Image 1 (tube, rainbow, N blue to C red):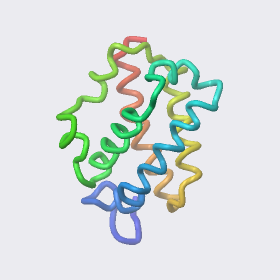
Image 2: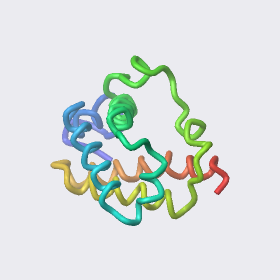
Image 3: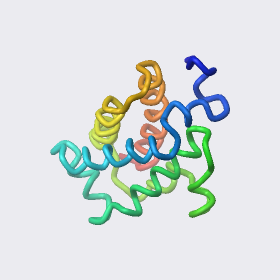
Image 4: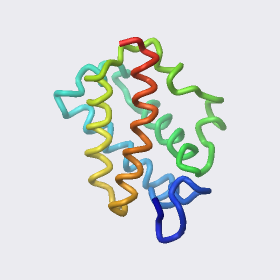
Length: 137
């Protein structure tokens, strides 16, 4: 997919389309609000600590680098293999769908271009599926 400034996934185009770290942080905050509010996400919310401060920062930092921006996660926490980091969790189809639903609702409420919203959700479905596959559920 193309943005007006180039192709998503090339360089830092996706990072810029997401609004940089401030935009990503806004997305992450809404994502975790959704996780707290949607009954369908109770099981995945329960997989997280009560205080989501670190979880919010880690996801925002991860998404920063994943979208082509600064590699904040690796700078602060080291390298990560997303599927392996979640392998200890019981993530089946239901949990994966709940995670994606929370994210989809958060993405929909961001001031992103419509085609970037589609692109972003397509990209996020890849690690969500890999996590489900390695969890063995």
